[in-house]
Amino acid sequence: MTEQLKQKLSDSKGTRWGALLVVAFTMMAAYYVNDVVAPLKSMLEADLAWSSSDFGFYTGGYSFLNVFFLMLIWGGLILDRFGIRFTGKLATILMVGGTALEYYAMTGLTGSDAQLFGQTSFFGYKTGVFVAFAGYSIFGVGAEVAGITVTKIIAKWFKGKEMATAMGVQVALARIGSQAGYSLAIPLARSFEITTPVLVGLILLVGGLVAFFFFAVMDKRLDRQLAEAAQTLGETDPSEKFSFKDVKNILVNPGFWLIALLCVLFYSCVFPFQKFASEFMILKYGIDENIAGTFAGLPALGALFLTPIFGGYIDKRGRAASIMLLGSAMLIGVHFIYAIPGVDYWLVAIVLMIILGIAFSLVPSAMWPSVAKIFPVSQLGTAYALIFFIQNIGLWGIPTMIGKVLDTYCIAGQNADGSNVYDYTLPMCIFTGIACLSMLVAWMLKRADRKYGYGLEDANIKK
Image (cartoon, rainbow, N blue to C red; front, side, top):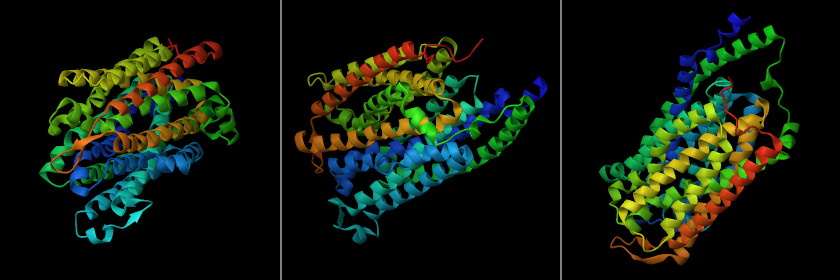
């Protein structure tokens, strides 16, 4: 029996890490597409006549369907009901379709379809902006569902093994996509067209779709092996135990709400900030626009190296709750210093982005494996989906609010090309306040861990 159990694909270190790399490529492509438009904010204003409100509306589109049509929650239910292979393929197809629509919308504003878009508006926004928003919304559904699918894949393939390290590596590889998006967006747009960075992302996503179909073959074989092993041991497959009653069990768990609140508050201080960070670096710190995106992407670059390291530490030593508290505290210092008007030396901006990158590595490396300790595997897809749903409320609302705040209260002048010059003091104060709330929730989570015995401070690898 022991010999039979050792024959599973997931028992082979090389095979399980190889499977991780295959699905991680898909997420790399997704993260590239998610971040590649952010450095182009000023160019969108100058070339396509977008305003900050337009940009904030478009950026919030990522989470619109997930929040208001509950698509992410349905994705989690589909994941637990129909499995990772079906859900992953569906999610990747949605990402490809949404990005294609986004590319068409932006191309139509400057190409032969310009008359179609013209001055027509939907809900007060130019048609091109609205269609780009719609494409980004569809992409957002696919990207978020793909995220929870890959997380459940890791929980399945690395159960009882290097789970936090694997999640850290996946996050790190995804950050390569983010960093590539931030670094290449402006050079590609300047060298070719403003839509070229999006086109590159579309091509990468098609490759990611092919990669996921390849992984599905591997996972189907593992399922057969798991079924044989369960039959040998006289057990049932835990993935077959999900029922809709489990949603209630998730929602009444205090750990769920604390993890979800920490997630939405922490990520609201990172991802929405990064959407505006390139322009912020240019306006306040005088950083050249060709490298401002690279500096804005430093948190992703830091996560590339640090998240696997922190994940390995958590696997061996534990202390996940304490690490989440530390990462949240670091965010407060970063945004508070960014909010100080007189501190405008470029080196300060870079150092703070590096610190933000450390915090950005600490919290995810501890947060996502912690969910697998609080909930059984049959509930993981739904639990992750509900957490991501709450996170998406922040990812929709915060950038939309920041865009409105900039246009309403923060215009300080205009550039020669007609784009606005903004004072980012008020937005940075908003981010500081959100960071303070995230630290409070992290402290409450650490207390709850002691009270309910989630084991968040325990090591993942059992000796």
